[in-house]
Picture 1: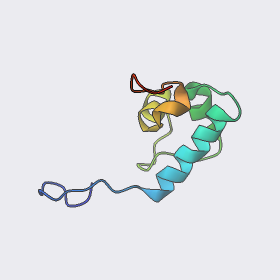
Picture 2: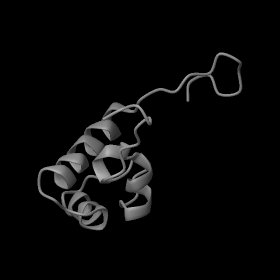
Picture 3: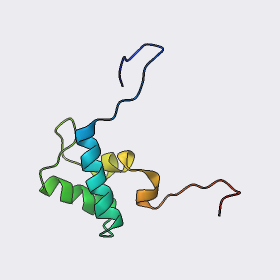
Length: 79
């Protein structure tokens, strides 16, 4: 978050981590891997979290867009 603690704080995308998350989405959507398998693949490739830690299913799941892991909320009037 940029300018943490101010009224005009804004979320800022970490581009390096965003690339890893896009790779993860590819593993899940294109290769039909689950989140645990995807975390293992990212770690095997040396793609760690922005803090330098290995990926876990839990921390990866929190960063994924909802539709990537099967949850796609819809408003009642949407088909």
